[in-house]
Length: 137
Image (cartoon, rainbow, N blue to C red):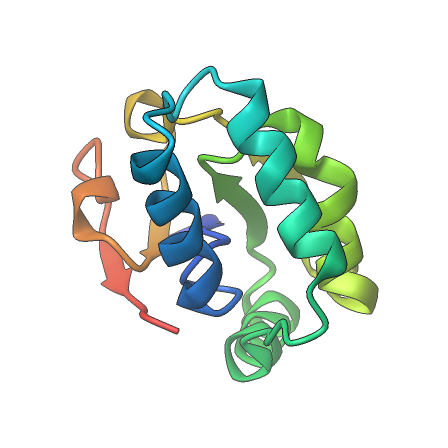
């Protein structure tokens, strides 16, 4: 039985628009994804200042129902820098209570040691022989 669910943020919980903008900005400015503070500073401002953010409310409500019925732990699991914790929680608003932990891997999510169900918009993160569900939002 699955006891933990790991949920990606960009492209899974919020509109894929933000992840696409991140990759575009990174490429246009020749910035490193894993350790460029200027990239992540720009991204945090984009998220903080953008009023068109769209949360995947359907998925969040399904996670709430699963958590209540099956008593699983739900973890936010992201490639974001830890510096984006405030912006991430702001984006989630009242839905932050859905998550038992917030895991920021700063571009190194693929090397994390996790066990459980993975929900992500990119199947390359279905790691460690964990089951995964592809969700594009």
